Amino acid sequence: MNKKPKNSNSPGMRVVSFPDGTSVPLLGQGTWNMGEKQGMKEQEVKALRLGIELGMTLIDTAEMYGSGGAESVVGEAIKGLREQVFLVSKVYPHNAGRNKIVVACENSLRRLKTDHLDLYLLHWRGQIPLKETVEGMEKLKKEGKILRWGVSNFDMDDMEELFTIPNGANCMTNQVLYHLGSRGIEFDLLPWHKSQQMPIMAYSPVAQGGSLRKQLLTDATVRSIAEEHSVKPMQIILAWSIRSNHVIAIPKAVQLEHIKENAEAASIELTAEDLARLDKIFPAPIKKISLDII
Image (tube, rainbow, N blue to C red; front, side, top):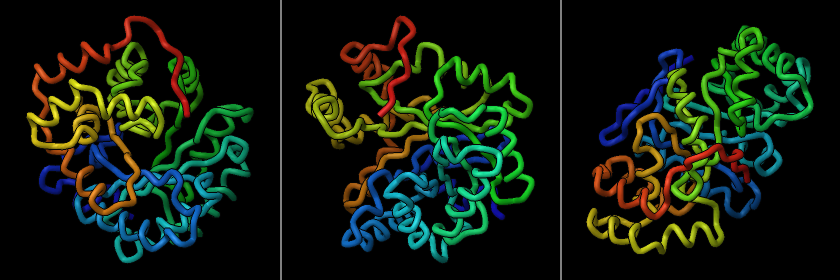
């Protein structure tokens, strides 16, 4: 079992460390909406493999995505490359009970064609007591089925409660929505994570499709900064999400050109002036904002 992707130090790909010292790329690959159309599988596999080649060796998936279909796509993509990949999957809240979580994890491992996950996340908080979920996660660790665990879509009060539970502080990360147009976590959650030396994982770092994504990509300031760096607006938004070296962004892409553009975003260095201009248009929060979830 390899705790650190072999090429996590690929040229241009910065890394961040989890509390246990394991380092991973600041840019990984998401798989939301993959595995839903059989006709797309070959393209999805090809995209993920290119991403690995370009240094985006962290791959995030979930039993929910495509009802396991995304995990099957990932399993095909990492065939022969498992030692290079930091593999993340997520468990449904209703499967996060002490016994059910073992079955759910084993099903994910079967679809992924691997004997362990590098990181296993509770997808969001449900009705199962956190204490029971933590016990289940720790059991999976002892059995070697997962190397570490974390949570997703947890707000500040959830994280504080988690840390009062025995072994709750073994949590390695919290995966949440975070992008230039959704900065609520910067008020309390992100600073708390920094104090714990625990990176945030950002899903939809360029915003999901819709009016907000369009607003970000067409904003005059974003476009101006992109032109100055000779890159695309999407790359500026993605570079912004990992600017602090404390956030792991996991954009999803299927088009090969898009994969290449995502990887290139890791080497974009935004200046203090760039960041100030973006802050003016998309300001940081000045009060507590409930966690955005999609």
